[in-house]
Image (spheres, rainbow, N blue to C red):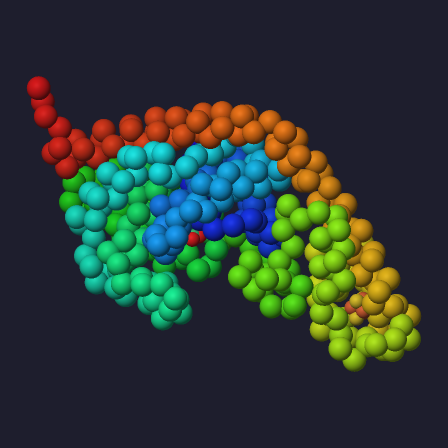
Length: 328
Ligand code: TRP
Ligand code: SF4
């Protein structure tokens, strides 16, 4: 079986945008690949090193989100990056052979240094972010890596680093291929991209009431005030959600809206009900998980051990190839 590895930084609760994008591909891939899914806590610290206090809590929340949507610890190996110390060793060794200009011209690096002004990111660790990511991937010799569009430069660098290693010490690493996770057609409740930092997300852990309230706040066609006003569903967040979560109904919603036969209040109520139908089983699973928090701990320890076993095997070969093995 081919191997797949992916990681997510534990920066907070996951939302419907994550579910439609990355989580669905995790669930799909655990069936057909030897899958490794990692909480990238060291990566989170490359930007949040001044405020590390939420990392542990966010890590546990991430496991709850993963498990509640059906990521299966029996099928996939779920682990925490910082618990598999071998990643740090490979990161160091790959750093020896990675030219600094490769890192300095990384578009993600340049962009983030421009955009993030409230923290000092002129650190060695932040520049080395893609080297750590390359170590994460190569230590499992993954064939495939599900990522979003923004991570493509990092995967390109991973391949370049793998190639350079293979050239210097003999072929060992695969050049991993990306699998682009679909960008969900799902906006946030204000019509911008759904994101925790925009405060416009519907979280997997939201209660029924939260969902009703958020749907009530969704931006609709501003020209439609009364039920019999002609509406423009193309400009309506509610309609965008129907097209993802109620495909059978969306045609009718669009038609009625355009004909002035549909009121926004009812339209929203029906959508909230539909979203809650989707979220109820996820909520129930989450409740079950929260009742038995020791089980999460067992899952974490079990996954860490499994990941470490593979990582150790890789490091044996890497040390040998880099002449770091004593023969006595
Ligand atoms: N950098 C990735 C992100 O921010 C997270 C990540 C860390 C990752 N290591 C990885 C993704 C390895 C894929 C493979 O989304
Ligand atoms: Fe949007 Fe529905 Fe109102 Fe039309 S009726 S504008 S689709 S909420």
